[in-house]
Image 1 (cartoon, one colour):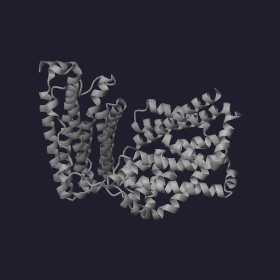
Image 2: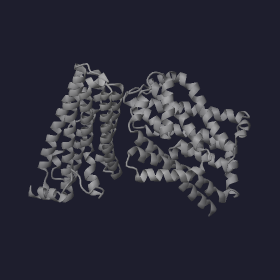
Image 3: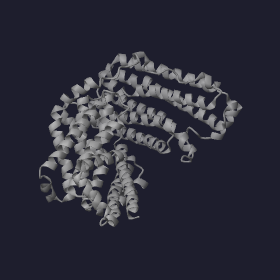
Image 4: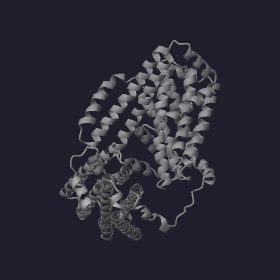
Length: 563
């Protein structure tokens, strides 16, 4: 019964630890917005810069696996090279080790302070940045609470016969302990959480130091498998990064395990205390792996490039945008008709997303051919809206219930918003990009940085909007509306800063003033259009009393009945 109670309490504490790590990561991601992309893709000059970017990202995200996935995704998109991606991943593992070092300190006295500050900021702050700061502080407090719970759960079994038997077996079978550490890390999908748990076991005397070292080195292998598993659906070429990381980390951890077992190194480490000794092993291993392998990553990538060549493209340039998803044979079947309608709205949104992404790049390059091709995409968006209207008009209303009618109306309204968003890109932003290059204007450094940050946020919100369209997740819908409010704040702040630069006599700002203000307004308007998908979802859940989209749903139903 004691063992069952221990396992139950340990499971609860472990899940709280995993939740807390994710909570911190989510808070930082939302607070920083899309700045991760700039941090990763900006590290293009050399591998040392890439490794440093990986260290910073891992500290921010509290996860080397999340950083590795980010780098792999950017490599798949062609934003960074495979070599640079692997450099970022190697740096991320060392950054994750630094996070473990900080969290392993005795910080119990901080828990009430973090809970009080974090709770107040999260519940009562109106600013997204402060709200997410509250989320981060609460997450750190929960991590410390979870570690304390692990300690409290272990008290009843400290003197049991069961634990010494397991510990003795793992001490004699260090390869088994190594594999157990790898398996637990893979199951938890977090090396930070797994190693913190191992450190706590060692500090409480539940396991000997030698077993803890084997498990921590195994956690490095398990972490590499997590990244490989999570990237399984990506492009074959980009997956060279997690495969290379698995090879380096797998062989490295095995070599480190045999070295520690063959030489009396553990005696030197115990002078720091068993818990700190375990953290030191993890830090030293990742530091050495980074220093030794970073100069040679290119050598490893070359054979992998032959074994994992890029997936050949199956479409020509003209086939990048899929054909209409509207099923003309399903108009008498409401479920199938609405499904194809949603797919078509999503396809329409994907075209708009393709249009908005390169806008700031076109401000710099002025590529006429690319501007023409994006304007041509707008014709596809307009055509899609026309098809959606005709399709909805052709639906058999006698077989559709009130809910189906409402769904069809909401999808049509969002399609109209997407068409407007496409027009904003084609008829406003691209026209401004042409003027910017034709007149050879320049934004001030601060003005340009403000526009780039706002554009990055708009692109991130576009992705979020389409996730809301598919999932209809209430929390994501609320976040999208919060982002819309934040976008209005960012636009206002940038406008005020721009006017201050004008008052200070900045000649560059004066020459490009109109374009700066018009670009700000266009980006804000685009964001408002793509955010429209959230309003009906929030209204139906009772979290919105009145909106510009759904002011009187009963009236809308009456109009549908009259038609």
